[in-house]
Length: 103
Image (tube, rainbow, N blue to C red; front, side, top):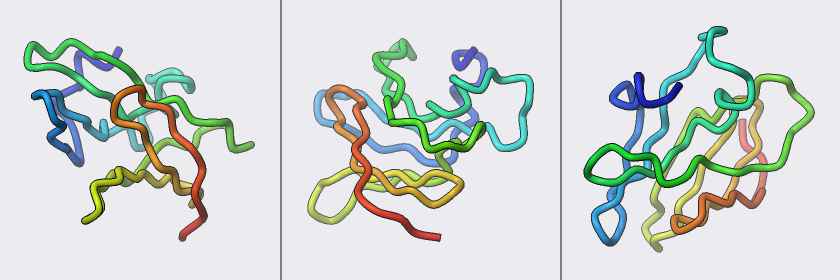
């Protein structure tokens, strides 16, 4: 479903090699399946092909999409979900590791 909305992003990060990571806007859109809504950070190439969707552990909330994506000054990429869990995101694989909580 994301290819139709990939241009509706909130944040975008340029990666080495020309790929990009984007936080896809899904707020309140109940037509997007829960699994896709909760994995709303994607990496795509110059042809808009999705390379990966973020893979993060379940939080216990049915809909807990990402609401923030940042590249820190030290190069680490972080994301925050709606209910406050923060993650470090591997830009090569999309694997997200919980790193804290912030509201």
